[in-house]
Image (cartoon, rainbow, N blue to C red; front, side):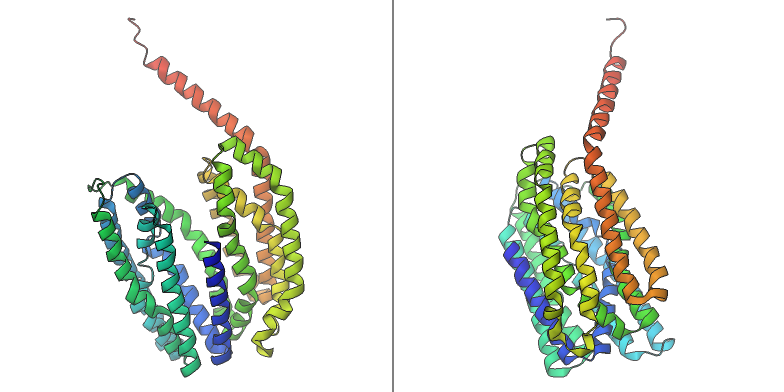
Length: 414
């Protein structure tokens, strides 16, 4: 898994270099703005359906899967309609026909781009290698096709088509194959509505994080310009790839720690937290030194990106600890707190973007992101120091409720 993540990260880095070489800096910003727009619109595709599919198969209720696929298509069409309306804004009000055509094109690709719930079927069946292979195939073809399109045409619209084409062609194929896998099983096929309710809860938790993850780029393009967005995105490439890799790299040790039980897993985490912080400091120092060289290949137009990236690298001092801790807590009956805390953090970041970007630009934005990681780190430290007392209180309440239920069920006549 880590090797696959590293391959895709290297491929993505190479693609971005190709795009900055063969597209204008404004065109590259256009592409990044539109991709971020579709990233926000993922919330209309009901993303909680992915987790619900995994849960339904694990609990042997595969009848939900085909219904989830149909709902995905239905909600994605609503996303396409929103994109068409936005493209009309660019055509007739903003008078930016170039961006309008890109958004109009993606409106037709959108239902296929997020029709990737098949991945959960393979994972639930334990076909991890095949799920990873199919995912890498789609992403690799997408990145290579976009690079080729940019190199030969230098046209943003053609590059966008190349980037999304593999999803249009392969996601329906893999979805059909996943249903055949289920047909060979012996699970119960009836539909159970509880999974749709579960999907709704997960989707609600994901709304604010999805918005805050992409809103900064849209605001930079809308309030400043596409050139500024291009420089900012290049600044985030290495820090973001590393931050996203933390979850993949730590999933194996986390699963091992959790296999010993809740309290034992927490004890092992505490025992290793000094080493985690030491590694974070060393990686941050390495990034701070090497980022100007690594990002220098993007050329003079993107020269300011290295300064922003050095500031963003400070996030790595805090992110690994909080990411590992909250990933572990989600499996320790602490998911509700994590969801609420993440929602509050995402809402705060969204408000901060609206305030900071118009007045402080990219410099204010990157410091806001570092501050957000520091606050999330502080929340993790506070929760870690108090989690055992919280567990004890919760268990005591459960014991009192259980005792009360037993007492209520006693027959007074003996």
